[in-house]
Length: 369
DNA sequence: TGATATGATTGGTC
DNA sequence: GACCAATCATATCA
Image (cartoon, rainbow, N blue to C red; front, side):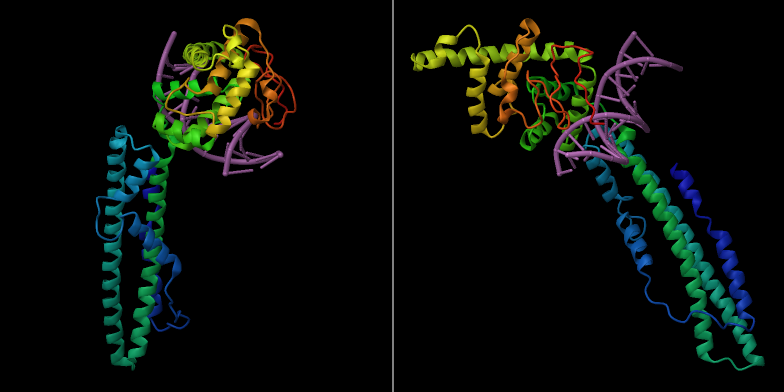
């Protein structure tokens, strides 16, 4: 693709036509030529860009800044080094072509200026030629050549942009996240199944844990929510897996907490309910803790978070006993219109049901789109 | 090599 | 600006 872009600038025909034009004008008629030539802002932009990309100006390793940008965009993983060297090689090629062409044009410009000067000198034998006229002639020639240079710069910029887009287009070099990263994301997702909308802090924490960017986390959750919702049945097994996994941790943590409560405060109201989780109460308790934390996810220990535990336990209970609690109605818990039994749905659908227990065919009717 | 999975992008809504 | 839904483009697997 980039090769095509490189071939796009066909300067030579343009050069010849301009040369012919100037030659014609050197006959006698040089009227109508432009007199003023203020600094062209477009040319300045092109120059700046070529300089920034490392195409013009001193060589800095073939656009190291752009390569660094490419590295940053791709997450900075080491397996991109080959692509980066490829990028640099191609940029170097562009640079070489640019400089070769530029040199050619400068040479042609000088040669042609000399040629015109000689012509004028010859003409001066037959007619008087003022220095002003000579100066004007030279000005015309230089303007024509600089317009060609601008075309060259434009084409070079295009080639660089295409090259960059090719290497920076993340879709083209998509990498699957690591298994560990996917595990972490899935654990969070399924342990927050009633409200799988991580806060900004949670996203940052997840991003850090998974070595991905926050926007990648957002993308992942966006994809996950939509694909889960579309085909709950397909994800059932996965949901069970993660729910069970987290539930073990959760059960241990809750048991430990209960034991601790019993030890420290034998008269605690919750102590009597050990052995059968009273989820709504637990939920309230956890809600309070959640509000203390400001967020339901602490990142470093999946399952340590009590909110996650409630979600997980509820999910497991759902799997086994068809339990349906009223947690979804809690305003702290339902920024996205949770449905009655802890499922979630988009903000535009009023109150249809989404439950992990219901399987395919029971996906809530999403008519928002 | 085709089917499927999956991360990213885009366009629209709120 | 966050989110959803559709879609694209690539990775992975049978």
